[in-house]
Structures are given as structure tokens and as C-alpha cells.
Image (tube, rainbow, N blue to C red; front, side, top):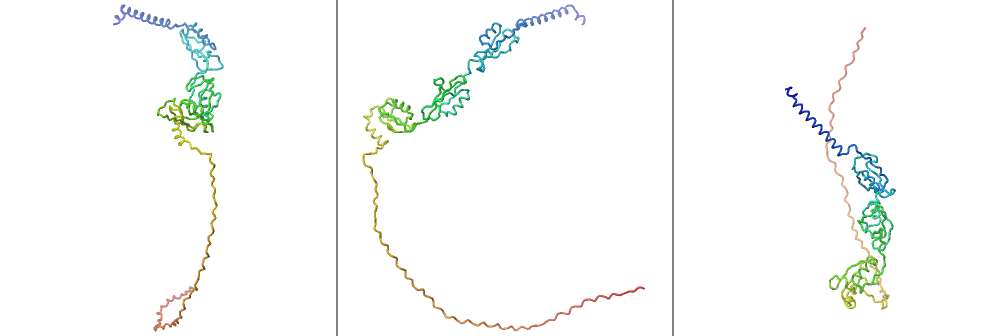
Amino acid sequence: MLKSLFHWKVLLNILLAAAVFTGLVWLTFRWLELHTNHGKEIPVPNVMNMSVHKAVEILDDAGLEYEVDSFKYEPKFKPFQVLQIYPNPGARVKGGRAILLKVNPRTWAPVQVPDVLDRYKGLAFRQLEAVGLKVGDTIYEPNIQRDAVIRMQMNGSMLKPGAKVPRFSVIDLVIGTGPKRNVTVPNLVGLTVQEAKAIITNNLFEVGLVEHEDGGQDESDIIYYQDPEGGAVRDQGMQIDLWASKKTPGQMQGKIQQLNSMYRMRIDTSLPPIRYEEVPVYNDPTPIPDPEPVKTQPRQEAPKQAEQPKPKPTAPKPANTNTTTTKPADQPKPAEKPKEKKVIVE
């Protein structure tokens, strides 16, 4: 068996197999060196504090890839300035390696404006500051909502809730002053419904009932009656009811008189005022008769009855009783003690 192992053919096959295996291993490592550029490392250039455009040109010339990330805004640095780099400058990397550049953005990241309309001003201030916005001027404007936010402005233009603005932007708020009292109601008779509604809104009143004669909703109908009437004094925020028709107010006099009887009561001031005087009435006093004296009859005493003699008490008779004396029985005498004997011993 040993002779067969050391046969020249067997040894030749073993040598050929070893040579083939060694060649495959060498080719594999050689291919890896060529594919991975083994030994060909590039130092990372120092592009700190450069502008992002210049840093990108340097990395391209060095044969390196790059990724730009605009993270937190720092006001003390210039916009688009490279603040951080990874890997660190001077580190050796392979060609084609991506280098991460963190750049200072142009301004703060945008934030969404919260909805603070129709809310109390104190709550609106806190909500705006919570998202990183600043409150600028507070402009007060006539409105029935006292101390409520009516609208928002930024740089003089309207700002809607949900819009995105840079962080730390200054936003102006328009605040309502509340309703005024004793304001004259405008005269709306003869105007169209559309014009009347606009005037009511501008004077900070509320549009109440709008009744059309034909039951429709045509905004071009003419107002022939309103309540309260024009010239009356009311507080802002009160509602004004309207009656409209396609006819002119002169053609609706019958309806106007009917509505006047329902909503307005006229007091005739031309008549003299009525005076109420009370006439005193004097009545003769009626004489009050004196009360008659009450007659009292003398009290009659009952007749005394004659005293009857009391019977004399009789002494009780002594009872006849025989008394017998009994002698006590003879009692036995006590036994006498024996006398002591004296014995003398000489």
C-alpha cells in the first residue's frame, strides 16, 4: 500500500493540485488588491470653515464623493459655511469614499404657524413662542371680540395659519377692542340686501332675520323695513333684522304699517301730559253711643242650717277575762366542782 502512495503518478497529481490551489489564492488576492485599490489611500483634505461650493471642488479634485447636510442654523457663522466634516481632516480613505459635510444653512429651518385666530391674546402669545416665533406689534382694531386675535401679519402682509416661515420670525397680531356702546344704527331702507349686509358688518353689527317677500334669497331685493330702525342707538354686536322685496318701499306702505304695529309703538307727545290728582274726601264723624252701665244684682247668701247635736262617745265595756299566773318550772342546779385535795410529801 505504501508503494502505491509513493508512486510517481500520485505524487505528480498532488503537486499539480497544490500548484493550482496556490495559483487560485494568489489570483484572488491580486484581484482584491486591484479592485479595492489596496495601498492607494487618499488623505481627507481639510475643508473646514470653507464655503460649501469651494469644499465640493476640492473633494472632486481629490477623487472623493461628498454628502451635504444642512443641520442646525448658527447665526454667528456665515451661510453655507462648512462646520463639520466626517471622516476628520487628514484621515486616509479609499478613492470614491463619501465625505459627509455639515453646512450652516442660510437661515433657520421653517416652522408652521399655529392657528391662533379667534383666541385670547395671552394664549396666542404662548403658542407662537412655543414653536420659536416672536410676537411683534399688537394692533388694536374695533371688533366685537374683546382681546381676541383677529388676524396675523408678517412684514405688512396677511399670514394664514399653517403657513411655513423661518424660525424666530416676527409676527404682528391684530387684537379686537370689544364692542362699543350707544352706536347709531345705519339706515338701510332703499338699499339692496347685499349692500345692507356689507354696511351691517362694517359697523360691527350682526345680520339677523332676512325675510324676502317672495320667499326667495335674491341679494338684489330692496330693503323696505328694518328693525331696529335707522337712527336708533344700540350696542355693537346686536343683530338687525331686514325685510326685502322686489318692490320699492313706497309700494310696501301697507306692509310697513303692519310691521310698525308689531315692532314700533308711537307715543303722541303733542297732547298735554295727564295729571293725576287725588281729591281728599272728608266724612262727618258718626257719634259713638256711650255704653249702657251693666246692672249688678246683690249676691244672695244661702240660708244656714241648724246645727244638730253631736252624739256623745260611749266608753267601751271592759271584757271579762280570767287571768291565770303560771310559775316557772323548777330548773336543775348546776353540778358542783370537786374540791381540790392537798397532798403533803415529807
